[in-house]
Image (cartoon, rainbow, N blue to C red):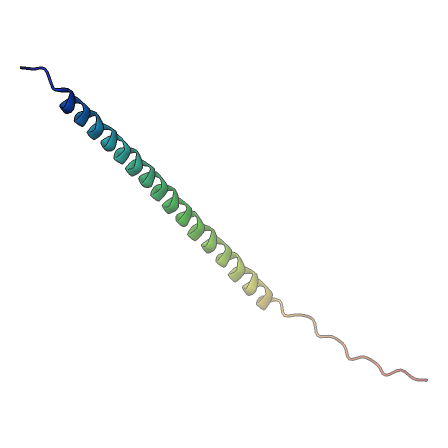
Length: 77
């Protein structure tokens, strides 16, 4: 009695199809989550670098104040 009925074989095949689809969907979601996490980490790293650069630029600008502009001489007619 090792032979399975056609109905049982069809049910097993249907289950395997659903199970395979579920596994594929889970893998895709997992990969997209991994990609999103990597993108977020890279964005945070780049933001930190940009903020450091802006801070250094502000500090450099503060260290060298602009030259005073000489007053304009009035024109004589």
